[in-house]
Image 1 (cartoon, rainbow, N blue to C red):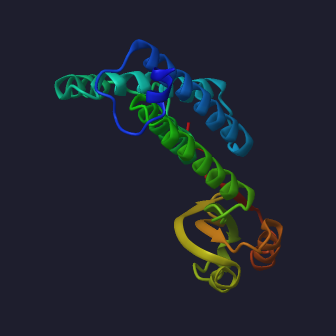
Image 2 (image 1 turned 45 degrees about the horizontal axis):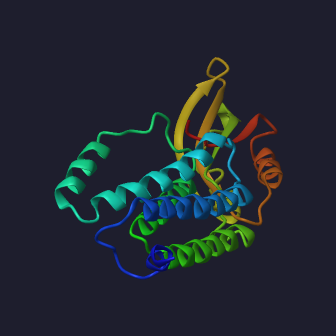
Amino acid sequence: MQELNQLFTSGTIEQSSYLMTVFAMMGAAGLSLIVTKVYQLTFSGERYSQSFVHTIIMMSVLVSVVMNVVSNNAGVALGLFAIFSLIRFRSAVTEAIDIAYIFFGLCIGMTCGLFQIELAIILTIFASIVFYLLYKFDYGKGKDTQILKVTVPENLNHENMFDEIFATLTDYHVLRQVETTNLGTMIQYTYAIRSKKEVKDQELLNVIREKNANLKVSLSYFPTAD
């Protein structure tokens, strides 16, 4: 019981027992399960990865042990961090929010490894609520940048013919490429645009078709990085 009481006291304990280390790993594993549950509830990407969920849990547990080892030995700490600097993920993180969840798990492991269990619980609850509220209220949502390709007859060739449309329906636009097509009888313009939140894609396409003699118009989004 004395060791259990020490486990929940604040401050770093100089001589931690094996039993306390086990308690720290159990705390890290339990709290990281909450983190991964929040991640599953708020996931909105294209590719869900079960291995990523497992990674968050395992990293939290492993870091709790590492922090327990290095908490009283600066030399060991420098050596371990030098080794960790050589580690690279084999696959790139596809969503920016995934980086935050990895760091979330690491922070839980660090606090548990330093036996700051109460702080780890507070961190888990507060950060989980923040993550969920950001997802629930869709905070900061905006339109992605799109690629607009417009074909116009050569006799209507005018680079600024769509400027009025863009000024009304988009927040941002820039001409990226101009090329000839159909044996030089047609001109294809490629724009990078970001339409306004209230503007539907079909609405934008219909207005442009009125200007380009109802020729081909395509609108695509930047592909997600692999």
